[in-house]
Image 1 (cartoon, rainbow, N blue to C red):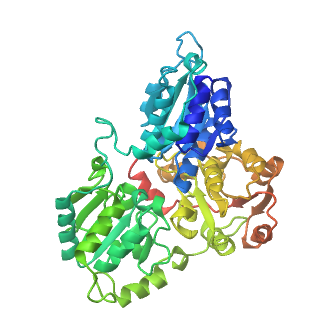
Image 2 (image 1 turned 90 degrees about the horizontal axis):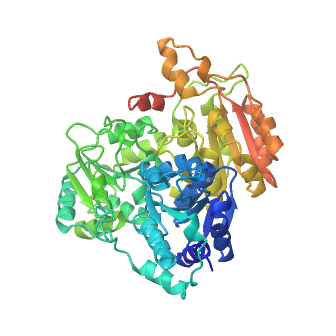
Image 3 (image 1 turned 135 degrees about the vertical axis):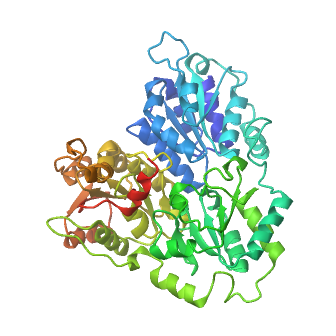
Length: 562
Protein backbone atom coordinates (compact mmCIF):
# COMPACT_ATOMS: atom_id res chain seq x y z
CA UNK A 1 0.00 0.00 0.00
CA UNK A 2 0.97 3.66 -0.07
CA UNK A 3 1.61 5.81 3.00
CA UNK A 4 -1.77 7.58 2.78
CA UNK A 5 -3.51 4.21 2.97
CA UNK A 6 -1.39 3.15 5.93
CA UNK A 7 -2.29 6.34 7.81
CA UNK A 8 -6.00 5.65 7.40
CA UNK A 9 -5.61 2.03 8.42
CA UNK A 10 -3.67 2.84 11.60
CA UNK A 11 -6.09 5.57 12.70
CA UNK A 12 -9.00 3.18 12.29
CA UNK A 13 -7.10 0.56 14.28
CA UNK A 14 -6.35 3.09 17.02
CA UNK A 15 -10.04 3.78 17.50
CA UNK A 16 -11.10 6.59 15.17
CA UNK A 17 -14.66 5.75 14.16
CA UNK A 18 -15.91 8.97 12.57
CA UNK A 19 -14.35 11.56 10.27
CA UNK A 20 -15.56 14.70 8.56
CA UNK A 21 -14.00 16.64 5.74
CA UNK A 22 -13.97 18.10 2.29
CA UNK A 23 -11.99 16.02 -0.18
CA UNK A 24 -9.44 17.33 -2.65
CA UNK A 25 -6.50 15.70 -4.39
CA UNK A 26 -4.22 15.99 -1.35
CA UNK A 27 -6.50 14.11 1.06
CA UNK A 28 -8.32 11.84 -1.39
CA UNK A 29 -6.41 8.64 -0.67
CA UNK A 30 -6.24 9.00 3.10
CA UNK A 31 -9.99 9.67 3.25
CA UNK A 32 -10.73 6.61 1.15
CA UNK A 33 -8.43 4.56 3.39
CA UNK A 34 -10.35 5.65 6.47
CA UNK A 35 -13.63 4.61 4.84
CA UNK A 36 -12.16 1.30 3.64
CA UNK A 37 -11.24 0.43 7.21
CA UNK A 38 -14.67 1.13 8.66
CA UNK A 39 -14.53 4.82 9.57
CA UNK A 40 -17.76 6.71 8.87
CA UNK A 41 -17.07 9.75 6.70
CA UNK A 42 -19.33 12.80 6.51
CA UNK A 43 -18.65 15.29 3.75
CA UNK A 44 -19.17 18.97 4.53
CA UNK A 45 -19.52 21.85 2.06
CA UNK A 46 -16.77 23.99 3.63
CA UNK A 47 -13.64 23.00 5.53
CA UNK A 48 -14.55 25.37 8.34
CA UNK A 49 -17.80 23.49 8.77
CA UNK A 50 -16.04 20.12 8.59
CA UNK A 51 -13.65 20.93 11.44
CA UNK A 52 -16.43 22.30 13.64
CA UNK A 53 -18.55 19.21 12.96
CA UNK A 54 -15.64 17.03 14.05
CA UNK A 55 -15.07 19.22 17.12
CA UNK A 56 -18.71 18.95 18.19
CA UNK A 57 -18.76 15.21 17.50
CA UNK A 58 -15.73 14.68 19.75
CA UNK A 59 -17.30 16.75 22.54
CA UNK A 60 -20.62 14.92 22.43
CA UNK A 61 -19.30 11.38 21.83
CA UNK A 62 -16.24 11.47 24.07
CA UNK A 63 -14.17 9.97 21.25
CA UNK A 64 -11.24 11.25 19.20
CA UNK A 65 -12.55 12.48 15.86
CA UNK A 66 -10.76 13.12 12.58
CA UNK A 67 -11.15 15.67 9.83
CA UNK A 68 -9.47 15.59 6.43
CA UNK A 69 -8.69 18.62 4.26
CA UNK A 70 -6.76 19.57 1.15
CA UNK A 71 -3.34 21.18 1.40
CA UNK A 72 -2.98 24.97 1.49
CA UNK A 73 -6.40 26.60 1.09
CA UNK A 74 -8.17 23.55 2.49
CA UNK A 75 -6.29 24.08 5.73
CA UNK A 76 -6.63 27.87 5.77
CA UNK A 77 -10.38 27.51 5.25
CA UNK A 78 -10.45 25.29 8.34
CA UNK A 79 -8.34 27.54 10.53
CA UNK A 80 -11.13 29.20 12.57
CA UNK A 81 -12.57 25.83 13.47
CA UNK A 82 -9.10 24.56 14.39
CA UNK A 83 -8.60 27.57 16.67
CA UNK A 84 -11.89 26.85 18.43
CA UNK A 85 -11.05 23.17 18.89
CA UNK A 86 -7.53 23.94 20.12
CA UNK A 87 -8.72 26.50 22.66
CA UNK A 88 -11.29 24.00 23.89
CA UNK A 89 -8.73 21.18 24.22
CA UNK A 90 -10.80 18.99 21.90
CA UNK A 91 -9.12 15.65 21.07
CA UNK A 92 -9.11 15.98 17.30
CA UNK A 93 -6.83 14.90 14.45
CA UNK A 94 -6.68 17.11 11.36
CA UNK A 95 -5.30 15.24 8.36
CA UNK A 96 -4.03 17.66 5.73
CA UNK A 97 -2.13 17.18 2.55
CA UNK A 98 1.05 19.25 2.51
CA UNK A 99 2.84 20.82 -0.45
CA UNK A 100 6.47 20.95 0.66
CA UNK A 101 7.85 22.33 -2.61
CA UNK A 102 8.11 26.11 -2.09
CA UNK A 103 7.36 26.61 -5.78
CA UNK A 104 3.89 25.14 -5.39
CA UNK A 105 1.02 27.58 -5.28
CA UNK A 106 -0.33 25.43 -2.43
CA UNK A 107 2.79 25.84 -0.31
CA UNK A 108 2.46 27.52 3.08
CA UNK A 109 4.07 26.81 6.44
CA UNK A 110 1.20 24.65 7.67
CA UNK A 111 2.89 23.76 10.96
CA UNK A 112 3.45 27.40 11.88
CA UNK A 113 -0.09 28.21 10.83
CA UNK A 114 -1.77 25.80 13.23
CA UNK A 115 0.75 26.33 16.01
CA UNK A 116 -0.21 30.01 15.94
CA UNK A 117 -3.78 29.08 16.97
CA UNK A 118 -2.79 26.52 19.60
CA UNK A 119 -2.90 23.21 17.73
CA UNK A 120 -0.06 20.67 17.78
CA UNK A 121 1.71 20.23 14.40
CA UNK A 122 3.05 16.77 13.54
CA UNK A 123 4.21 15.23 10.28
CA UNK A 124 4.63 11.92 8.46
CA UNK A 125 8.28 11.96 7.44
CA UNK A 126 8.94 8.57 5.84
CA UNK A 127 7.24 5.34 4.76
CA UNK A 128 9.14 3.40 7.43
CA UNK A 129 7.89 5.59 10.27
CA UNK A 130 4.39 6.36 9.00
CA UNK A 131 2.50 3.87 11.19
CA UNK A 132 4.32 4.84 14.38
CA UNK A 133 3.96 8.58 13.69
CA UNK A 134 0.24 8.18 13.00
CA UNK A 135 -0.31 6.25 16.22
CA UNK A 136 1.66 8.91 18.11
CA UNK A 137 -0.58 11.66 16.71
CA UNK A 138 -3.62 9.74 17.96
CA UNK A 139 -2.04 9.33 21.38
CA UNK A 140 -1.29 13.04 21.73
CA UNK A 141 -4.85 13.95 20.70
CA UNK A 142 -6.40 11.46 23.10
CA UNK A 143 -4.15 11.58 26.16
CA UNK A 144 -3.25 15.26 26.12
CA UNK A 145 -6.65 16.37 24.81
CA UNK A 146 -5.10 18.35 22.01
CA UNK A 147 -6.06 19.24 18.47
CA UNK A 148 -3.33 17.76 16.29
CA UNK A 149 -2.47 18.58 12.69
CA UNK A 150 -0.94 15.54 11.03
CA UNK A 151 0.74 16.88 7.91
CA UNK A 152 0.82 14.44 4.99
CA UNK A 153 3.50 15.66 2.53
CA UNK A 154 2.32 14.90 -0.98
CA UNK A 155 5.54 13.14 -2.00
CA UNK A 156 5.68 11.02 1.15
CA UNK A 157 2.02 10.00 1.27
CA UNK A 158 2.22 8.61 -2.26
CA UNK A 159 5.28 6.43 -1.50
CA UNK A 160 4.87 2.66 -1.22
CA UNK A 161 5.19 1.15 2.23
CA UNK A 162 4.72 -2.16 3.93
CA UNK A 163 1.25 -2.68 5.30
CA UNK A 164 1.22 -2.31 9.09
CA UNK A 165 1.70 -5.92 10.14
CA UNK A 166 -0.62 -5.88 13.10
CA UNK A 167 -2.86 -2.83 13.37
CA UNK A 168 -4.59 -4.39 16.38
CA UNK A 169 -1.22 -4.53 18.17
CA UNK A 170 -0.64 -0.91 17.13
CA UNK A 171 -3.98 0.01 18.69
CA UNK A 172 -3.25 -1.93 21.86
CA UNK A 173 0.14 -0.24 22.20
CA UNK A 174 -1.42 3.19 21.83
CA UNK A 175 -4.18 2.49 24.34
CA UNK A 176 -1.69 1.12 26.85
CA UNK A 177 0.65 4.09 26.57
CA UNK A 178 -0.93 6.65 28.85
CA UNK A 179 2.09 8.71 29.86
CA UNK A 180 3.16 11.69 27.68
CA UNK A 181 6.77 11.61 26.53
CA UNK A 182 9.22 13.69 28.54
CA UNK A 183 8.96 17.32 27.56
CA UNK A 184 5.55 16.91 25.99
CA UNK A 185 2.74 18.58 27.95
CA UNK A 186 4.70 18.07 31.15
CA UNK A 187 2.16 20.27 32.94
CA UNK A 188 -0.53 17.60 32.51
CA UNK A 189 -0.52 14.92 35.20
CA UNK A 190 0.16 11.46 33.84
CA UNK A 191 -2.98 9.75 35.11
CA UNK A 192 -4.79 12.40 37.14
CA UNK A 193 -3.09 11.38 40.38
CA UNK A 194 -3.24 14.37 42.75
CA UNK A 195 -0.63 15.43 45.27
CA UNK A 196 -1.60 14.18 48.74
CA UNK A 197 -0.64 17.46 50.39
CA UNK A 198 -2.78 19.48 48.02
CA UNK A 199 -5.75 17.17 48.61
CA UNK A 200 -5.30 17.49 52.38
CA UNK A 201 -5.28 21.27 52.14
CA UNK A 202 -8.43 21.24 50.00
CA UNK A 203 -10.08 18.99 52.58
CA UNK A 204 -9.20 21.55 55.24
CA UNK A 205 -10.66 24.45 53.22
CA UNK A 206 -13.87 22.55 52.53
CA UNK A 207 -14.15 21.42 56.14
CA UNK A 208 -13.91 25.01 57.38
CA UNK A 209 -16.43 26.34 54.85
CA UNK A 210 -20.04 27.11 55.76
CA UNK A 211 -21.26 28.22 52.33
CA UNK A 212 -19.33 26.25 49.69
CA UNK A 213 -20.16 26.43 45.98
CA UNK A 214 -18.79 23.97 43.43
CA UNK A 215 -18.48 25.24 39.83
CA UNK A 216 -17.85 22.44 37.34
CA UNK A 217 -16.49 22.98 33.85
CA UNK A 218 -15.58 21.00 30.76
CA UNK A 219 -13.00 18.97 32.68
CA UNK A 220 -15.68 17.73 35.08
CA UNK A 221 -18.28 16.49 32.64
CA UNK A 222 -17.30 12.88 33.40
CA UNK A 223 -17.51 13.34 37.17
CA UNK A 224 -21.12 14.08 38.11
CA UNK A 225 -21.44 11.15 40.49
CA UNK A 226 -18.21 11.98 42.34
CA UNK A 227 -18.94 15.70 42.59
CA UNK A 228 -22.51 15.19 43.78
CA UNK A 229 -21.28 12.73 46.37
CA UNK A 230 -18.72 15.18 47.72
CA UNK A 231 -21.15 18.11 47.56
CA UNK A 232 -23.68 16.10 49.53
CA UNK A 233 -21.09 15.34 52.19
CA UNK A 234 -20.12 18.99 52.69
CA UNK A 235 -23.33 20.85 51.85
CA UNK A 236 -22.14 22.55 48.66
CA UNK A 237 -24.36 24.15 46.06
CA UNK A 238 -23.69 23.13 42.46
CA UNK A 239 -23.14 25.29 39.39
CA UNK A 240 -21.41 24.93 36.02
CA UNK A 241 -19.62 26.94 33.42
CA UNK A 242 -21.57 27.39 30.18
CA UNK A 243 -19.87 24.48 28.40
CA UNK A 244 -20.91 22.08 31.18
CA UNK A 245 -24.54 23.25 31.32
CA UNK A 246 -26.86 20.44 32.37
CA UNK A 247 -24.28 18.49 34.36
CA UNK A 248 -26.30 18.64 37.60
CA UNK A 249 -29.77 18.75 36.06
CA UNK A 250 -32.26 17.14 38.40
CA UNK A 251 -30.39 17.94 41.59
CA UNK A 252 -32.37 20.16 43.99
CA UNK A 253 -29.11 22.06 44.63
CA UNK A 254 -28.37 22.86 40.96
CA UNK A 255 -27.89 26.59 40.30
CA UNK A 256 -27.37 25.97 36.56
CA UNK A 257 -24.79 28.20 34.85
CA UNK A 258 -22.49 30.60 36.67
CA UNK A 259 -21.42 33.84 34.99
CA UNK A 260 -23.13 36.05 32.45
CA UNK A 261 -25.93 33.49 31.98
CA UNK A 262 -26.55 33.06 35.72
CA UNK A 263 -30.04 33.65 37.08
CA UNK A 264 -30.39 36.44 39.64
CA UNK A 265 -30.70 33.77 42.34
CA UNK A 266 -27.55 31.94 41.21
CA UNK A 267 -25.60 35.21 41.14
CA UNK A 268 -26.86 36.03 44.64
CA UNK A 269 -25.99 32.64 46.15
CA UNK A 270 -22.61 32.33 44.44
CA UNK A 271 -21.86 35.90 45.44
CA UNK A 272 -22.44 35.03 49.10
CA UNK A 273 -20.24 31.90 49.16
CA UNK A 274 -17.30 31.65 51.53
CA UNK A 275 -15.57 29.02 49.36
CA UNK A 276 -15.68 28.55 45.61
CA UNK A 277 -14.11 25.44 44.10
CA UNK A 278 -13.65 25.28 40.35
CA UNK A 279 -13.65 21.67 39.15
CA UNK A 280 -12.16 21.29 35.66
CA UNK A 281 -13.27 24.88 35.16
CA UNK A 282 -11.11 27.81 34.06
CA UNK A 283 -12.98 30.31 36.27
CA UNK A 284 -12.49 32.78 33.44
CA UNK A 285 -14.11 36.18 33.01
CA UNK A 286 -17.29 34.64 31.58
CA UNK A 287 -17.83 32.20 34.44
CA UNK A 288 -17.01 34.73 37.17
CA UNK A 289 -18.39 37.89 35.51
CA UNK A 290 -14.91 39.38 35.42
CA UNK A 291 -14.38 38.24 38.98
CA UNK A 292 -17.42 40.06 40.40
CA UNK A 293 -19.14 36.79 41.38
CA UNK A 294 -16.27 35.92 43.69
CA UNK A 295 -17.10 37.65 46.97
CA UNK A 296 -14.44 39.56 48.91
CA UNK A 297 -12.95 37.35 51.56
CA UNK A 298 -14.06 34.09 49.96
CA UNK A 299 -11.48 31.35 49.50
CA UNK A 300 -11.00 30.08 45.96
CA UNK A 301 -9.68 26.64 45.04
CA UNK A 302 -9.27 25.06 41.66
CA UNK A 303 -8.86 21.44 40.55
CA UNK A 304 -7.63 20.77 37.03
CA UNK A 305 -5.73 18.08 35.16
CA UNK A 306 -3.52 20.80 33.71
CA UNK A 307 -1.37 22.49 36.37
CA UNK A 308 -0.82 25.46 34.07
CA UNK A 309 -4.57 26.19 34.25
CA UNK A 310 -4.51 26.72 38.01
CA UNK A 311 -4.91 30.41 38.80
CA UNK A 312 -4.64 31.40 35.14
CA UNK A 313 -7.71 33.68 35.23
CA UNK A 314 -8.36 34.51 38.88
CA UNK A 315 -6.08 34.29 41.92
CA UNK A 316 -6.59 31.04 43.82
CA UNK A 317 -5.81 30.19 47.41
CA UNK A 318 -5.17 26.59 46.41
CA UNK A 319 -4.62 24.71 43.19
CA UNK A 320 -4.83 20.94 42.94
CA UNK A 321 -3.48 19.23 39.83
CA UNK A 322 -5.37 16.03 39.17
CA UNK A 323 -8.38 14.37 37.62
CA UNK A 324 -11.61 15.86 38.97
CA UNK A 325 -13.34 12.54 39.62
CA UNK A 326 -10.34 11.12 41.43
CA UNK A 327 -9.84 14.19 43.61
CA UNK A 328 -13.54 14.38 44.51
CA UNK A 329 -13.82 10.71 45.42
CA UNK A 330 -10.63 10.90 47.49
CA UNK A 331 -12.04 13.85 49.42
CA UNK A 332 -15.36 12.12 50.01
CA UNK A 333 -13.57 9.15 51.51
CA UNK A 334 -11.49 11.43 53.71
CA UNK A 335 -14.40 13.55 54.96
CA UNK A 336 -16.91 10.76 55.58
CA UNK A 337 -20.74 10.97 55.56
CA UNK A 338 -22.53 14.10 56.83
CA UNK A 339 -24.00 14.16 60.32
CA UNK A 340 -27.23 15.78 59.10
CA UNK A 341 -27.69 15.74 55.31
CA UNK A 342 -30.85 17.88 55.51
CA UNK A 343 -29.16 20.92 57.07
CA UNK A 344 -25.54 21.07 56.03
CA UNK A 345 -23.21 23.79 54.79
CA UNK A 346 -25.01 25.99 52.28
CA UNK A 347 -27.95 23.60 52.07
CA UNK A 348 -31.09 24.45 53.99
CA UNK A 349 -34.84 24.07 53.42
CA UNK A 350 -35.07 27.78 52.56
CA UNK A 351 -32.29 27.60 49.94
CA UNK A 352 -33.88 24.49 48.46
CA UNK A 353 -37.25 26.27 48.27
CA UNK A 354 -35.73 29.26 46.52
CA UNK A 355 -33.84 27.17 44.00
CA UNK A 356 -37.04 25.29 43.14
CA UNK A 357 -39.00 28.54 42.76
CA UNK A 358 -36.38 30.86 41.23
CA UNK A 359 -33.64 28.62 39.88
CA UNK A 360 -34.56 28.71 36.18
CA UNK A 361 -34.80 31.65 33.83
CA UNK A 362 -38.34 30.63 32.90
CA UNK A 363 -39.36 31.68 36.43
CA UNK A 364 -37.81 35.16 36.21
CA UNK A 365 -40.47 37.83 35.38
CA UNK A 366 -39.99 40.09 32.37
CA UNK A 367 -41.96 42.58 30.30
CA UNK A 368 -42.90 40.99 26.98
CA UNK A 369 -41.81 43.40 24.23
CA UNK A 370 -43.41 41.50 21.34
CA UNK A 371 -45.32 43.54 18.78
CA UNK A 372 -45.12 45.22 15.42
CA UNK A 373 -44.42 41.99 13.59
CA UNK A 374 -41.61 40.93 15.94
CA UNK A 375 -41.44 38.49 18.85
CA UNK A 376 -39.57 38.99 22.09
CA UNK A 377 -36.72 36.44 22.04
CA UNK A 378 -37.50 35.47 25.63
CA UNK A 379 -41.11 34.70 24.71
CA UNK A 380 -39.93 32.77 21.66
CA UNK A 381 -37.42 30.68 23.58
CA UNK A 382 -39.69 29.86 26.52
CA UNK A 383 -42.34 28.68 24.05
CA UNK A 384 -39.79 26.54 22.22
CA UNK A 385 -38.62 25.06 25.52
CA UNK A 386 -42.21 23.97 26.19
CA UNK A 387 -42.59 22.49 22.70
CA UNK A 388 -39.29 20.66 22.25
CA UNK A 389 -38.81 17.08 23.45
CA UNK A 390 -36.77 16.64 26.59
CA UNK A 391 -34.16 14.59 24.76
CA UNK A 392 -32.42 17.39 22.89
CA UNK A 393 -28.98 18.79 22.08
CA UNK A 394 -28.79 22.56 21.86
CA UNK A 395 -25.94 24.04 19.80
CA UNK A 396 -25.51 27.80 20.09
CA UNK A 397 -23.71 30.19 17.74
CA UNK A 398 -22.10 33.43 18.91
CA UNK A 399 -23.74 36.84 18.94
CA UNK A 400 -26.05 39.20 20.81
CA UNK A 401 -28.84 36.59 20.76
CA UNK A 402 -26.84 33.70 22.24
CA UNK A 403 -27.98 34.07 25.85
CA UNK A 404 -31.63 33.39 25.04
CA UNK A 405 -31.18 29.74 23.98
CA UNK A 406 -28.37 29.25 26.50
CA UNK A 407 -30.53 30.39 29.40
CA UNK A 408 -34.14 29.63 28.47
CA UNK A 409 -33.71 26.24 26.77
CA UNK A 410 -33.23 23.53 29.36
CA UNK A 411 -31.16 20.45 28.53
CA UNK A 412 -31.45 16.99 30.10
CA UNK A 413 -27.80 16.59 31.08
CA UNK A 414 -24.24 17.62 30.15
CA UNK A 415 -24.66 15.79 26.85
CA UNK A 416 -27.45 18.14 25.83
CA UNK A 417 -25.49 21.35 25.30
CA UNK A 418 -22.74 21.92 22.75
CA UNK A 419 -21.10 25.33 23.10
CA UNK A 420 -18.29 26.06 20.63
CA UNK A 421 -17.51 29.49 22.04
CA UNK A 422 -13.87 29.40 23.19
CA UNK A 423 -12.87 31.58 20.20
CA UNK A 424 -16.17 33.50 20.08
CA UNK A 425 -16.44 33.13 16.34
CA UNK A 426 -19.75 33.84 14.65
CA UNK A 427 -20.79 31.21 12.11
CA UNK A 428 -19.92 27.90 13.81
CA UNK A 429 -23.36 27.09 15.21
CA UNK A 430 -24.92 25.16 12.33
CA UNK A 431 -21.86 22.94 11.85
CA UNK A 432 -21.73 22.41 15.61
CA UNK A 433 -25.28 21.08 15.50
CA UNK A 434 -24.43 18.73 12.63
CA UNK A 435 -21.53 17.18 14.55
CA UNK A 436 -23.65 16.89 17.69
CA UNK A 437 -26.48 15.26 15.73
CA UNK A 438 -24.11 12.66 14.27
CA UNK A 439 -22.77 11.90 17.75
CA UNK A 440 -26.21 11.61 19.37
CA UNK A 441 -28.80 10.52 16.79
CA UNK A 442 -31.11 9.60 19.69
CA UNK A 443 -31.68 13.30 20.46
CA UNK A 444 -33.18 16.16 18.51
CA UNK A 445 -30.42 18.58 17.54
CA UNK A 446 -31.43 22.25 17.81
CA UNK A 447 -29.16 24.83 16.21
CA UNK A 448 -29.65 28.32 17.66
CA UNK A 449 -28.21 30.96 15.32
CA UNK A 450 -28.30 34.67 14.71
CA UNK A 451 -29.08 35.80 11.19
CA UNK A 452 -25.43 36.76 10.71
CA UNK A 453 -24.17 33.33 11.73
CA UNK A 454 -26.88 31.59 9.74
CA UNK A 455 -25.83 33.36 6.57
CA UNK A 456 -22.15 32.63 7.25
CA UNK A 457 -22.83 28.89 7.61
CA UNK A 458 -25.40 28.71 4.82
CA UNK A 459 -23.52 26.08 2.78
CA UNK A 460 -24.08 23.46 5.47
CA UNK A 461 -27.87 23.63 5.09
CA UNK A 462 -27.33 21.30 2.14
CA UNK A 463 -25.27 19.00 4.39
CA UNK A 464 -28.11 18.76 6.90
CA UNK A 465 -30.55 17.75 4.16
CA UNK A 466 -28.13 15.37 2.44
CA UNK A 467 -27.37 13.55 5.69
CA UNK A 468 -31.09 13.27 6.48
CA UNK A 469 -30.72 14.88 9.90
CA UNK A 470 -34.12 15.70 11.48
CA UNK A 471 -32.70 18.91 12.91
CA UNK A 472 -34.35 22.15 13.94
CA UNK A 473 -32.54 25.38 13.09
CA UNK A 474 -33.80 28.45 14.95
CA UNK A 475 -32.62 31.81 13.61
CA UNK A 476 -32.90 34.79 15.95
CA UNK A 477 -33.28 37.31 13.13
CA UNK A 478 -32.78 40.97 14.02
CA UNK A 479 -31.40 41.88 10.57
CA UNK A 480 -28.13 43.07 12.05
CA UNK A 481 -24.92 42.15 13.76
CA UNK A 482 -26.68 42.86 17.02
CA UNK A 483 -23.58 42.89 19.21
CA UNK A 484 -22.10 45.76 17.22
CA UNK A 485 -25.41 47.61 17.07
CA UNK A 486 -25.76 47.61 20.82
CA UNK A 487 -22.09 48.28 21.43
CA UNK A 488 -21.87 51.39 19.28
CA UNK A 489 -25.42 52.79 19.13
CA UNK A 490 -25.21 54.39 22.61
CA UNK A 491 -22.27 56.46 21.36
CA UNK A 492 -24.22 57.80 18.40
CA UNK A 493 -22.08 56.01 15.82
CA UNK A 494 -23.56 55.28 12.37
CA UNK A 495 -24.77 51.70 12.06
CA UNK A 496 -25.13 51.31 8.30
CA UNK A 497 -22.25 48.83 8.14
CA UNK A 498 -23.81 46.43 10.65
CA UNK A 499 -27.51 46.53 9.73
CA UNK A 500 -29.09 44.84 6.72
CA UNK A 501 -32.36 44.70 4.77
CA UNK A 502 -34.73 41.82 5.55
CA UNK A 503 -33.78 38.41 4.17
CA UNK A 504 -36.30 35.64 3.60
CA UNK A 505 -34.33 32.95 5.39
CA UNK A 506 -37.32 30.62 5.32
CA UNK A 507 -37.35 30.73 1.51
CA UNK A 508 -33.58 30.14 1.40
CA UNK A 509 -34.01 27.11 3.65
CA UNK A 510 -36.83 25.72 1.52
CA UNK A 511 -34.54 26.02 -1.49
CA UNK A 512 -32.13 23.66 0.26
CA UNK A 513 -34.88 21.14 1.07
CA UNK A 514 -35.90 22.28 4.54
CA UNK A 515 -39.36 22.79 5.88
CA UNK A 516 -39.57 26.36 7.15
CA UNK A 517 -41.67 28.62 9.35
CA UNK A 518 -41.46 32.39 9.73
CA UNK A 519 -42.34 33.52 13.24
CA UNK A 520 -43.47 37.06 14.04
CA UNK A 521 -45.65 36.18 17.03
CA UNK A 522 -46.52 33.26 19.30
CA UNK A 523 -49.30 32.10 17.00
CA UNK A 524 -46.79 31.27 14.28
CA UNK A 525 -45.23 28.60 16.50
CA UNK A 526 -48.12 26.30 15.61
CA UNK A 527 -46.06 25.36 12.56
CA UNK A 528 -43.22 24.26 14.83
CA UNK A 529 -45.60 22.13 16.89
CA UNK A 530 -46.90 20.44 13.73
CA UNK A 531 -43.36 19.62 12.56
CA UNK A 532 -42.48 18.16 15.96
CA UNK A 533 -45.46 15.81 15.78
CA UNK A 534 -43.72 14.10 12.87
CA UNK A 535 -42.71 12.52 10.66
CA UNK A 536 -39.80 15.02 10.67
CA UNK A 537 -38.74 13.71 7.27
CA UNK A 538 -37.18 17.08 6.52
CA UNK A 539 -35.25 19.41 8.82
CA UNK A 540 -37.02 22.58 9.96
CA UNK A 541 -35.77 26.16 9.90
CA UNK A 542 -37.54 28.70 12.10
CA UNK A 543 -36.91 32.27 10.94
CA UNK A 544 -37.88 34.21 14.07
CA UNK A 545 -38.15 37.95 13.53
CA UNK A 546 -37.10 39.09 16.99
CA UNK A 547 -37.27 42.44 18.74
CA UNK A 548 -33.91 44.16 18.95
CA UNK A 549 -34.35 47.49 20.63
CA UNK A 550 -32.08 46.74 23.53
CA UNK A 551 -28.84 44.87 24.02
CA UNK A 552 -28.51 41.85 26.24
CA UNK A 553 -27.19 42.04 29.77
CA UNK A 554 -24.63 39.29 29.10
CA UNK A 555 -23.36 41.35 26.18
CA UNK A 556 -22.66 44.24 28.51
CA UNK A 557 -20.48 41.87 30.52
CA UNK A 558 -18.72 40.70 27.37
CA UNK A 559 -17.83 44.22 26.29
CA UNK A 560 -15.82 44.62 29.47
CA UNK A 561 -13.40 42.10 28.02
CA UNK A 562 -13.01 43.78 24.62
